[in-house]
Amino acid sequence: MSLPVVLAAGPRLPLPMTLAMLAVLVALPSALAVLRARLRPPSHLLWADVQGRPAQLYATRDATEFGRISRALLRASAP
Image (cartoon, rainbow, N blue to C red; front, side):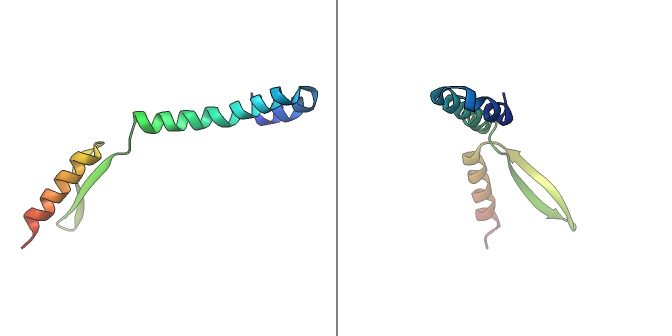
């Protein structure tokens, strides 16, 4: 089902059914996006410049762990 189908069939259907179809068209993609974001959170990458070239040092999907590691590295490099 797509928006053109709903718009074409809308005038022939009762208003509650048309609104329900539009709600499904909006809610389904939104729910799938939220589900994807929860199941696969963004990755956090730690990069360094090694002899003028970027090098990936660490990658994780856990924001808490990444924060701990990056703070520890900052403390270790402080004078």
